[in-house]
Length: 267
Image 1 (cartoon, rainbow, N blue to C red):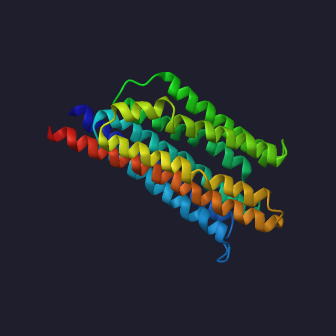
Image 2: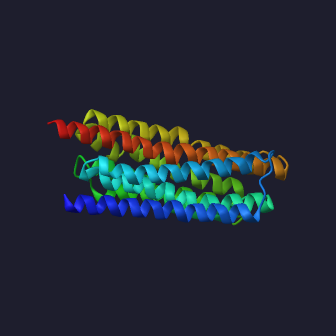
Image 3: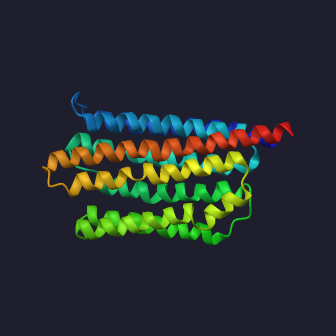
């Protein structure tokens, strides 16, 4: 009981610190640039950064509501939204002050948060079964191939089409693992209904939600539109995708964690 109280106090202090730190970042960004009412890309950056802060606080506080085996999953969900929120402050400032696409900040964010999202697949399965470490590494390899391919194209190190194909191959490898690979088999054979439902919904997000990113890449670099129109389309699509793939993904984890914890408490 004492450890639980200490953890609750530590969580409250940490959450308060997160809010203060992020709020300071928001104030700093606001002081250096003025958001125009017709800058819909800039508005999307602001809205999403606030949503990410709220999600971070929510996930960290909800740790106290779930059983021990789910706490790490909720912590990872909170870390995903926390890291993304910090980067969104920088990205929105770059956009509002310069009108340039914040490619470097975007990919730094993804290189941290996307592997964490893949870890969630491993964690949710580990909570109900013994999972070989190979599942973890295969998901990581697919993630890195996808991200490195995309960055090489967007940063100009490779032609956009070859880089696009490399990134798509990494994504296809991830889809294979979660739909037909060992991760999928463990879920089908060992998971209770609530976990299977969450796993299946997570797979849909990785399929449908992550499909939004290639659309952003396509409209940003492969349509032949003007530079301004391409940048607008790219950033709005990427921003919307981040809402779905970071916040909604974490809410799925939270839903199954609460459901499983409450079921266990009743037994």
